[in-house]
Image 1 (tube, rainbow, N blue to C red):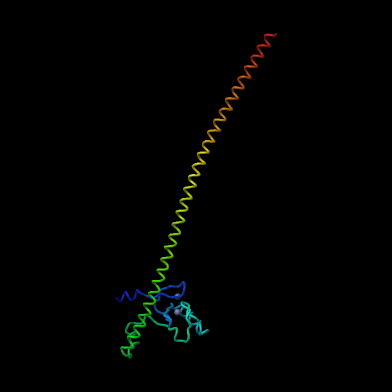
Image 2 (cartoon, helix red, strand yellow):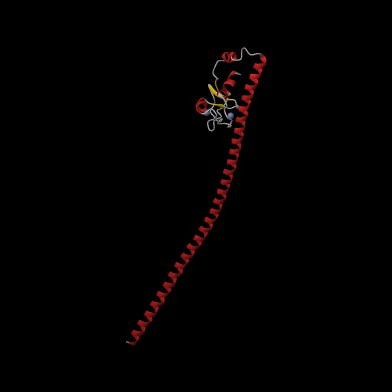
Length: 192
Ligand SMILES: [Zn+2]
Ligand SMILES: [Zn+2]
């Protein structure tokens, strides 16, 4: 039980901080809690400007009791002494407020986790859609590449055939030319 209590901590409500609160908690009347660093910052701001708003919810701090520093690492006996002297009704009232504060904080953490979960789910959907689109585009490009390669192959074959035909025509022309020259030489020999 003791180890569970030690592990289960509140987290700072300052936007972007969310660090676990170990020894010192700054508690507000509007049910928010801040780590040592952000609590001290808030205390300095309130000292300079007593009407400053809570960074977590915007509620205005009206007096010095709206923000309290609470040491969490006191031994249990020391903490218990803080309740000694009150009648049981007051002790129960204090415990009820403290438990409500704790539950409020845990509900906030749950709500944040749910929001994050939704955000990651949506991001995963968008990423999956982008991947499907990219795969579809890749498939189309592969089809186009196949067509271009087939056209290229066809053109190469045509070029080879054209060269072969040209060589054959040229050879036939040379052959005819040689025949005509031979015939002329024979005619010249005959006339002489
Ligand atoms: Zn913080
Ligand atoms: Zn607040």
